[in-house]
Amino acid sequence: MEQDQAVELLRRISFTLVAGKARLEHWLTYAGLIEQAGEPAAARTVLEAISQVRSRSSFLPPDMRLAVSGRSATPLDLIEILIEIGEPQAALKLLQGLKRFCNDSADLHFQLGTAFAVLGDARKAIASFKGAIERDSAHADAHLRLGYLLTEKGQIGEGFEHFMARAQIVSGGNAHDGGGGAPLHKVRHDQEQREYLSSLGVPASAELFHLGDGERVPGPVVNPAHVEDAVFARWKDASPQFVVIDDFLTQPALEKLRSYCLESTVWHRIYDAGYIGATPADGFACPLLAQLAEEIISRWPRIIGAHKFKYLGAFNYDSELSRGTNIHADLAAVNVNFYITPDDANLNPASGGIAVWNSTIDSEPLMRQLNGSETAMRAYLSSRNAVVTTIPHRSNRAVIFKSNLIHKTDDCDFRKGYRNKRINVSLLFGEYGASTRG
Image (cartoon, rainbow, N blue to C red; front, side, top):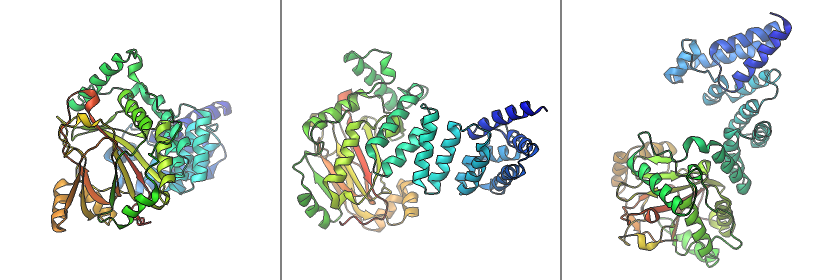
């Protein structure tokens, strides 16, 4: 093979490798070519990586086991597999060997960022993901990973910008995805949302991906009446540890957030229990929500301030079809959960909120086990003689509670109609097991 042809083949194969689209034969061809090019150490790195993955093949899904053995045409994302089996250093070494031949591609920087993130080097991971975006502004996965890293470091506004960029990039593939065998509650929601947007004069073409006004409000988001001393006085002695706060948001913030949830086509997470969800990756990360997360941290430093922002989500219930969330606990330190649907939508004011038991789950493996089985969870609660407190739904009511307290959505009975669906927003802060007494 002529030198120029070999170099071109190396370049094309290396792009395929870092994009996770290569088969085993491509990896082996690459190793042979770079050895011929006078790079035996780099060739050995590739072959050692394949050997390392093969030695752990029993841990891989069946299609990956076949790909590693060459008995399947499934792409062999060797770098991703190395990271998943706990070998990020091997992945990093392999990436460094690929770097010379793949012309500094966006996918290379993305894979480097993933390896650095697993190794706990947030600075290099952020720089790598930014490098991927500089080379390809439409690299959705790089925006997503960067969003998570920045928000974990407290750069919530910047992180949310990347979540929103990701949502815009992938919008064509999942907007109003309630067809094709989707459950009735998802299909019904999407149809009602289309009709609602049409009534606002939103063109049908724009309904595929539409965002309401989610800009920051000029004043505060959290009601200034809720000063920390008063809230903390209740929080530090509460048993079980939760506090209820009414009139949580300022009225301008509440109205804007309510409109954003109604107008924005961000409801893509489907739950079998009859409800749907929105996450930052879907576009539930507007500047208003960043402002809210930042204010919660700064407003209550003794309750929330010691804990980093971890998660944000919204949940939308069709009360005719929904059983609500299963009984569960969360892998965080503190939850802030609040409701935005108007009170006149709730047909039973004594219900529709949250049920909280006076029992925690104090082991992560046990939490994962119990969260996956309603039967096991109920048996656990019974064994501990746990007592439940039901906090009814009220519009603009927040419940702040210790995350590993066992809880669930209360039964709800809301009026029919798109504007009447029960919507709650949940923010999680801090690491599981962290102290919450201030």
